[in-house]
Image (cartoon, rainbow, N blue to C red; front, side, top):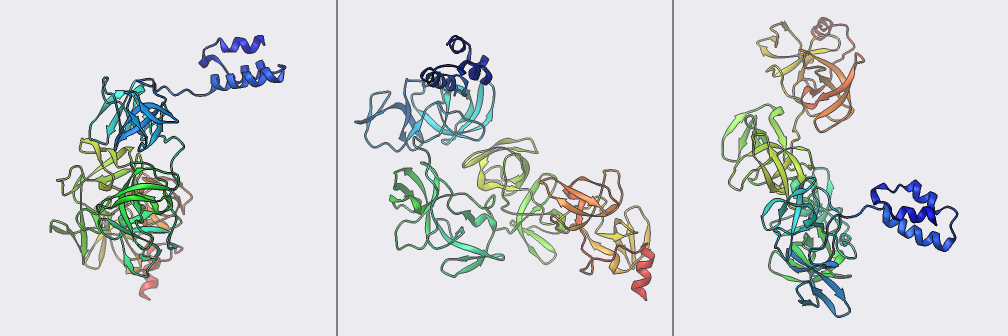
Length: 490
């Protein structure tokens, strides 16, 4: 046993899996089994979080607070000696965590209870934590413990009426249903055209203190918004936003997770990029976009963004910054929390904002004008230029002009997706667009294979779906634009 014995004297960081296997080879079975347990302890990752008061677990003692303590046959006892016979929840102590995890955290050096919060940024010695009670700041890493329920979480609810999603009907109610085209059809047959921000996932796993949709009674056909305040093996206690509370079957409970991103704050259907770093909610009226405050302007489709798009960490987004702000700012999501996420605003501000204020930056249309054009003209075999109409002439952005057929004019800023035929700029220096096909789509750049055999990743705003001004795609196989004109005029 010399080889194995020597291993246990080493620091954990110095023990390799190869050394462990070599030391175990040739040992009697009983010794090997004992040493395998020891070897597993030595070579497995160790959580760095320590018990502050010698507890073996966290016992939830408030809606958003927990105390260290122990469990036994006579109930649970906190480190202060308080006996709790029916705790709201019991959680593991010392669980490793990472950025965006929900944690129990000691806020100060003399705190005797841990508070619920979310890790927003991770450092080597300290990390930035936002507590659910609104405090936020840097605290030592060994004060944080990942929120992991003893016995694990609870699987999400089951459909009661065959639905695939939940739709929010009003401030506190939701219905099961399915999509049919652009409409959501409730399980009772009612249908409505909806925003993605009103749709929630069905069957998402939940845990204590989570915000949920839940059925309250057997005979009820709708779900109500609420919070899980205690978890049982078959039923859990839910406090509903409308004042009701009590135990309900676990299969009736669904974590409140939006299918889409942010929520509508001012009744808009889209977002408009108003100036350099701001956007407003609003609606279309003919060729005009009317912001929620009544301002209107004639706009390009390239300035319109969809509202309520799903987002994740590192996404470019539009977000409201404060409750009083009537407009959104451009920025980037740096860390994601259960209810709030950390955003760095392009204008310089940064901090946590409610998830319902955040919308992924997804254009309603395709590319943007690079040279102030209103349309694209098919100039020759595989090239197009931006420009504008002057009478019967099309004037390219470089000043060249020609009399043209409408069949050679293409719309600028049309929505595109994977496998679409497109016009796209290939490099920053190119003054014209080339014809090609989108073969892969990314959040900020997409892969285009050009008809002239070039290919590569391009900014999404350089790409325009190939849609004729007349509503169809003109033939790109003709030798030049003059022959197209001759065919059109004959």
